[in-house]
Amino acid sequence: MLKAVVTKDEYSALDPAIQELYGDETGDKRVLAVTSVDGMELADTKSLRTALQSERSKREAADKAVKRFGDLDPEAARSALEKVDEIANWDPDEKLKKAKGEFEAKVKAQFDAEHAKHLAKHQADLGEVTKERDLLDSQLATTLVDAALTKAITDAEGSVNLLIHPLKAMVKMKVLDDGRRVPIVVDPDGTERISSKTGAVEPMGMDELVAEFKADAAYAPAFKGTGTSGSGATGGGATGAAGSGQFTITAEAARDTRAYREVRDRAEKAGKTVTILDS
Image (cartoon, rainbow, N blue to C red; front, side, top):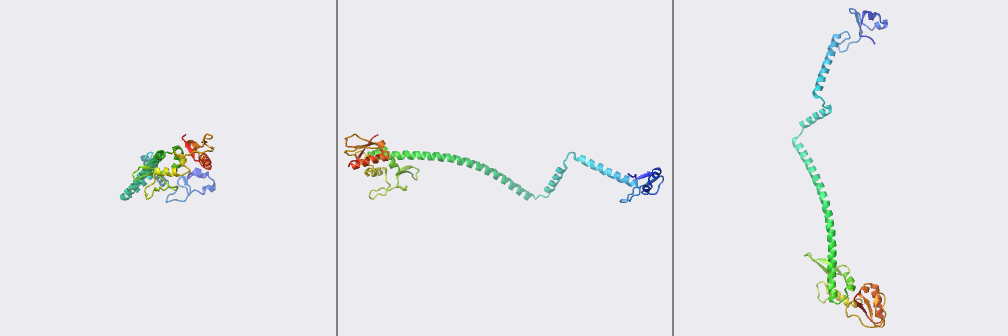
């Protein structure tokens, strides 16, 4: 590597081709011939030293400035300064409006979440209450219908065991405006029946319904005093003694429609009726 400044002896020891790169001798030294930059020449060591000292001073000043901030993160500092500039440009009214909107949205979201949770619990509780209510209504309807029909059948001297099931198919529960529940007689389509008595406009009662069954030849044997004597055999669920002249069947066995019809058909062929015996 070429030296910027060489002595007379160093110059003499250089290859002639290298010697051409140095300027004229000044005193006992020669300086490498290079083009000046920004007014500074290689021979001008004073200017170079001045420039070097200036750069050193700048470096020291920069080091002192850095030490003032200690461990402060430059990126964090820059972000903070940007925030300061942002705050300086804030519109108080606009900022208040935005903050209010964000707060209201947050409160609404919390309210909606709580409301949804309580609503789900309420619906679950309501479902349980509704299920329990429906069960109680069903039990109450069965009790009221059975009680009303049992009384009407008993008053007509009929067999409760035999008659209550076909009669129940014609009765349902009705809720009145005052909340009371009462059994009513209905048509096959569920419409409440009106009394068949001449000039009547009121609903049919249980007694009238039972009376219709009593007048029906198919159910007449289920009522006391409708059986007649005669001869014939019994079958199915029927009972009877040979030579007794009666066609009989117990109330429990008569609940089997096929057994009852078999005994009834045999009785009709013999010109007799069936007597239903208490179980």
